[in-house]
Length: 144
Image 1 (cartoon, rainbow, N blue to C red):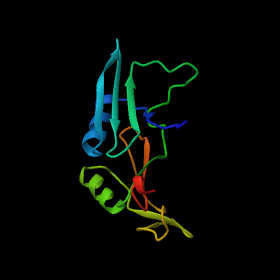
Image 2 (cartoon, rainbow, N blue to C red):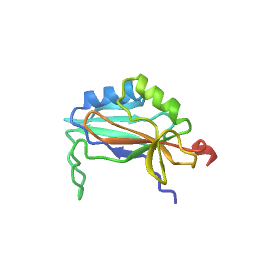
Image 3 (cartoon, rainbow, N blue to C red):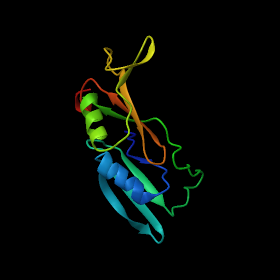
Image 4 (cartoon, one colour):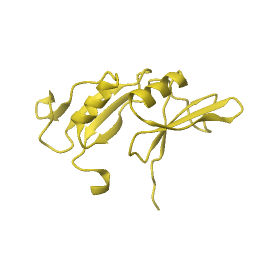
């Protein structure tokens, strides 16, 4: 049996502002934006090439046994790209406030691309403060 992560609930305070950020600044695709039940709006967006989408909701009660996450409380969301400098330039050019490209090495975090595979990152936050990392992968997912 496969266990695939396909949707992550992203806690935001303003659906329209979040949709604008992810669609227009990050370049994600809005797959769904509508009322799925009376008073319940869901926006589902997907990063380019991703098999996992993000769902943002308003008016939806927490699922049984679950707690509602506060807007901005989700940290460490990670996207992998094969050219981190191009991804950085694209996001920066779209108006995203993103850190410089950095790598993790023996001295900790240092600016610039690292030599070791999987060691290079840059970081940004959405308007609510949810934290994202871009990580440079050595090859596309289909080749790993």
